[in-house]
Image 1 (cartoon, one colour):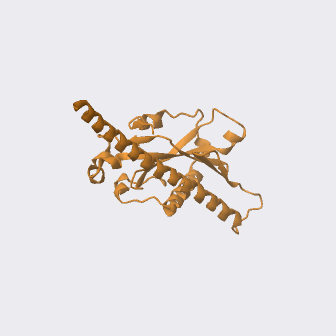
Image 2: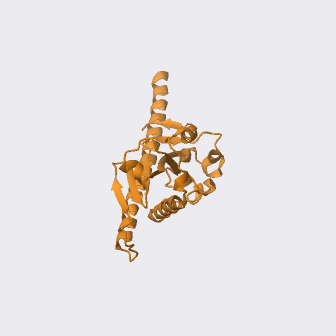
Image 3: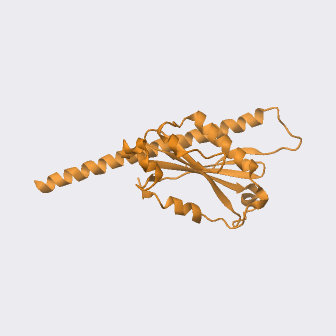
Length: 211
């Protein structure tokens, strides 16, 4: 009987953790779907706008699969990519020290949407050694709360995690901020040799948990 009782507790834990991860994954997936929809809306707005240069400047949406979407404009590419895993912030991370997380440890489990910037010609001419940049990461938890790690215009303080809700309006602000950052980024300073190392070190701080 004791062994059966131990197994029951184990199965309860397994079920609870599985349901939590599924919920976080679903929120992240729904958020990514919002991003796809909003990007298409912004592209349509551009195409229908009165701002029409003599020489056409591309502003185009491309669906690259279930977990990846591309936005091409003014010689640049933004690629929004949803990570298919769920991560937990470690105890030593500043996010884990927030009252919002301490009240409910399950809030520390998050899905991630990465935002990458590439030169458009890198893809057009298949220059595989050209550099790409991770310019932002969006974290979404079971409450549909989010925060962003990002460059300049994109970044938000994680202290807002307890109150910031992800919706279509928020997705639009993030996309527009990503475009502005990219347009202001000195393209002549982009180094060759795409390296994930610095960003991977950050990602390794999370507990990688498969659904």
